[in-house]
Length: 204
Image 1: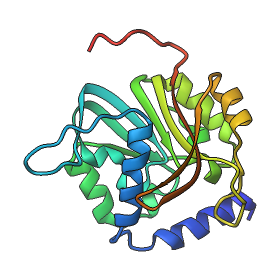
Image 2: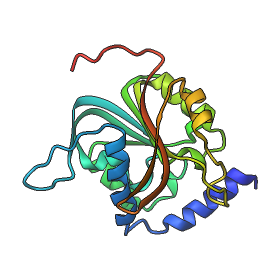
Image 3: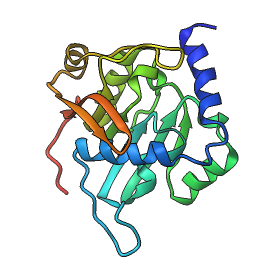
C-alpha cells in the first residue's frame, strides 16, 4: 500500500462505528464560523444553518457532514473515499436528510453539474494530491469555502503538512491565518472564501 492507502486504513479504523462523533462536530462549528456560515437558531436547536435554497458539495465530509446541521438546500452531496465503508445507518441518515453520497477521492470526482458552493474543511492533509482536490472544487463550485490546519506534523493518517503559501497558490487567493483554541479545535488555521472557475454573483 502507498501512503494514502495506509492513511485510509488508519482513518477507517479511527472512525470505527461512527456512533460518538460529538468531538468532531463541535470542532465543525468552529470551521463553519470561519468559513462564513451564519447560524440561524431555531427553538429546536441553536446549531442550524439556513442555506437559502443553495446547492452544496461537501468534499471529504465523512460520516457527519456539516450539511446535517443545515436546512433549505436545493441539492446537497457529500463525497468521501470511505463513504462505502461507513455503517449502513450513516448512509440512511444522509438519505433521510435528502443528502446524496458518493464514494470517491476528491481528486477523482467525475461530477459535471456545478454547485452554488463547495466546502472543504479539515480534509486536505488527508488527501493524496491536495492541489488536484482544490482544482476540482474550483471547477464545481461557484464559490469554495475552506478551512484547513497548517504547519502541522505528518503521521500515518495526516500525510501532508499544509502551508499558507501552498494554499494561497492552489486556491489562487489569499486566506486568513489565525491561531485557534476553541471547542477542542486547536492549532494554526488557514481559511477563506474563494471564487470558483465560473463565479457569478448569486441572485439569492
